[in-house]
Length: 457
Ligand code: SAM
Image 1 (cartoon, rainbow, N blue to C red):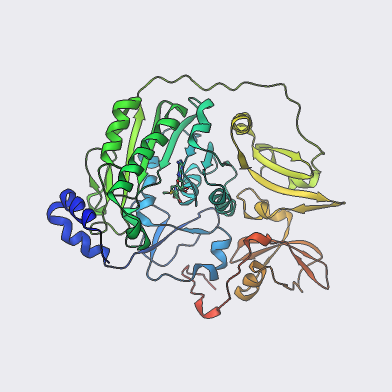
Image 2 (spheres, helix red, strand yellow):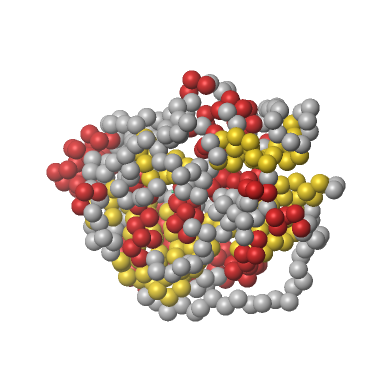
């Protein structure tokens, strides 16, 4: 690995005597880690726990994740371990039961799926991504994760300007020069220049300045990058505190984690922590902010058609949700968040909100894939069938499958108890309802399937 000379000298200045150990660690192998979805699987994987994240685990090898049906069912997310540190912000600083949270730079969804787990169905998560193609991937990953209290938006940070004082917490995982990814993604080395660091640093300030008014007074801003340099990290945090009206908040660290602190934020260096390079800082807004007020409009319900009774039976707690229809489709959003979601829809390009439940097709009510993957499905409303690995992969490839032992009608297919989606059993054949755009396109190789959860047989 040939590092740019300017990067070496700048980082040496920061790390001093530790620099050699740092560079040596960059020549090593990137650890593989996953975060499990506690709403979907009770089992833990074989492997060491990520010390700062209860549901995070290191794996001893990097398996072919595509060959594992569980990842398609949203039972876990493959995520770099250092990034899981944001859990400590929740564990140590978040007091509200139902906060409204914004993840501003969210695709592909590592931190958003984590935040969804930490919210555990309470409050609201607005997960935003400015690049449209990336917003679609974000939406897919969040749908698979299954939390019902998530809204996905595709907006520029500036578009949030009418939502002053809306959020209790704002996460800005900023686009950065990517220094921390050098080991995992050597391509990022070739893209690194001093000029780009400066450019990133200026853009980061603009992004945070644009979004800061959406934070309530005393709200918390969590700023992170995957870099080591001061321009994108400490100097920016200092600039935020001085120019936006905020104070830096400390987190308690366990000495054994190997996390370094500069007084303004927390650094993960690959020679000291088991993970990639990462920086995170926490600031509390000290500036007074006007409180966000919901303006109730007298707009008519946009329900086009009545929601069939059967749809309510598909949810474990239907009364907790506002179920509405648009054209011939049905959706559920947490009832307590209805007014806030309306406010978001009035300002932003909302591409997903809550859970898509299904749609009407002639006399048939078709359950939606998102329902199968959601935390709110009443599994007893459907016949379920557990597929063997080969059939689960065939289902996920959208190939033909057979369900000889199931009754006719809608069947929810699962793998190791984790729902993958719906199929309609017609007796002599089965209609596979897995979304075309999500299907596995890769050639299947059974020898590459290496399960790492310990299933009891
Ligand atoms: N938080 C994500 C996760 O954990 O999976 C990773 C986010 S990545 C570090 C930064 C994101 O910021 C990218 O998805 C990128 O498209 C987005 N981005 C790029 N330019 C931006 C801008 N000007 N404003 C807001 N977001 C931007």
